[in-house]
Length: 266
Image (cartoon, rainbow, N blue to C red):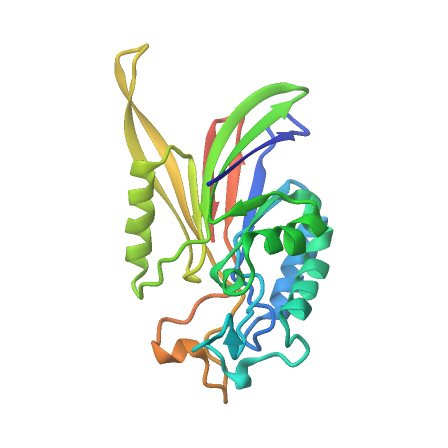
């Protein structure tokens, strides 16, 4: 597990900050909505009050043979001929991400990277060129908001690329609810299954000072994808086990440190 701390200076005491967790882009796959991805990158480059987290699976990285084994996901019909190799896909990712690197909290690695890229190589090829922390498979991010050097509020984010791939969205919700029973956090973010949703849940605790129950809001978020599952004339991997089509894009988590609140929308 990796743990990082970040402090953000608010322009005004009552400013709100928006977090966009972006992953499951799958550059190198013809199903990747490159136009939508680039449009979102351009927005984040110019928008004030936005920060970003990388959720993994930035590149498709599906090769006919990987580490001496045949990759069952390999389909020459789905390969973007402009980005055939791992290196070409990585270069395309770095070029697209560079303008928002200064707004990025860190980068998770995803299973599409892990297939052929170990931790050392991921750090060297993805994190170091962008000067970003490595978040591994699972990470805590302690996010502190200040105004004029005075702390306003701290939020704890638990994030992971994830491994849940069930057909029903309710399974992912239950998986993340279970996580909140095992890990202290204010926000849980998970990628991998390409679902796009945000849901608040409530947990009840105890205020020792006032001898009273207290309620705490925890925000759960599935962070979406830029990969279209179904394309005319192409037998995509997702069609082996057909699922509901996924909306292309991501979610937004909004922090309101002054009011001590947080909320999200997809």
